[in-house]
Amino acid sequence: MLASYLSLALGASLALAVKPLVVKDNYFVNPDTGNRFQIVGVAYQPGGSAGYNPELRKDPLSNADNCLRDAALMQVLGINTIRVYNLDPDLNHDECASIFNAAGMYMILDVNSPLVGESLTSYNPWESYYASYLNRTFAIVEAFKNYPNTLAFFSGNEVITDVAAGKTVPPYVRAVTRDLKNYIAKHSKRSIPVGYSAADVRKVLFDSFHYFECAEDGNQNDPSKADLFALNSYSWCGAATFTSSGYNTLVDGFTGSSIPVFYSEYGCNTPSPRIFTEVPTIYGPQMTGVFSGGIVYEYAQEVSDFGLVDIHDDGSATILKDFYTLRDQYAKLNFTTIQGVKPPKEDPPVAPVCSAKLITTPGFCNNFTLPVLPPGAKQIIDNGVKPTPSGKLVSISSWSVKQTVKNSDGSVLKNLAVKPFSNDEVNEPGSNVIDSGSGATASTTGSAASPTQSKKNAAPGNIAPGTVVAAAAIAAAAVIGAGF
Image 1 (tube, rainbow, N blue to C red):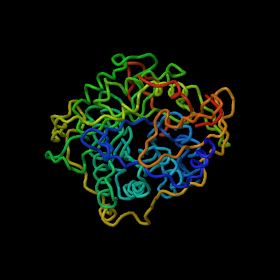
Image 2: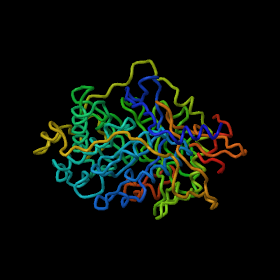
Image 3: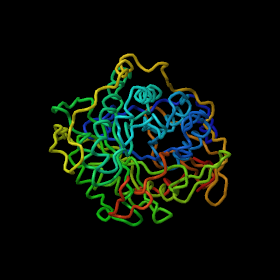
Image 4: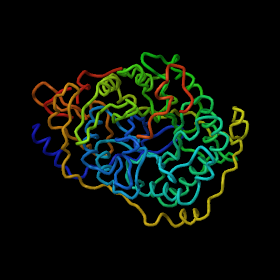
């Protein structure tokens, strides 16, 4: 029976799609079930900034073998969303997008990169806002808009890290959000949300949120209004608590939000190894009414030492201790309950009217007049990017991982593979536990530039500027015949 099951699963060529999610008020929602969606995510940028290299024609979603290896391990972990920072719109991403789709995982994608001309600058932002830059952001949209598991785009990441940047940058980030949403409305068959990923610098965090959330003249369909807001936060370190970490002030500050709010990065690595005690709180009753989950930083080990998996030059990989700790924290939770919540029936929050009164920090921009489109940009929005990148789901000939993957003790995982899901299924802890018949179960199954100083030195309540129920079997992994 096991053999016939494996033959069916591994021989499947084109797994059905996950259901595209929608934004309903301040929640992500499955349009068929009406249930809220909580992000259980991981930042995915193997190789760090060097993992994106247009000259070598590589980015994190351009190598199918690597994506298959990592999707299988993420299924073990219980991940349902990846965030990818730096992408090349001119590469083909069909196989990787199809693999993550089949593995039950959504993608949140940054439209910018660290290269010159591919992002807004925090200094003199008007010098980086021009048509060829916008063309590049629109090309990312074109490359990924047709994948059903494309969940959202980030128009900016940590561009505002202090009051000096807050003085000039906000109108330009909001303008890029407007331009992306107008492009999507004209060229995509479905609406895909656009928002901002902020540094958790409390002096400018909530002013940034209010600047991007508000609606000009009260128009709730204002295209410059963000569809979501996320933050990169490293304030929960070690055995912190809801209050000592400052999570309570985040919940207080975002209560009443009219758009979804979630962690676009979390996971302080001091002390090491990490214990991820924030996980039960992020997905517990103190936070789920306001937050929609979070994305752990990060999947691949880099010099900043936040990794869950160490990927070697030959494509082999070693699972690190933090991987197991995070998996075990997820396994304590009942995700069937967490993902089965309907939005409340009372009247939803409404975006406030944009006004200088929303801004509380002296020196932070309180003018909501946005820059006009730069010369040539309107033609791109009207006519589309040329040549036009495109993407579609494709058949995958085999779901088996080719590279060698080892446990932290050096033992080799046998028969590691992605389990392709049926239509509309999303990965969660325990969703790919297979009984091998031996008593051992096998698993279920960037980076932006180096972390800012806040990620390196964050301690509970001190954010540096610049930035349950489950069966024991749920702890198992998609490896057949080899337990963790």
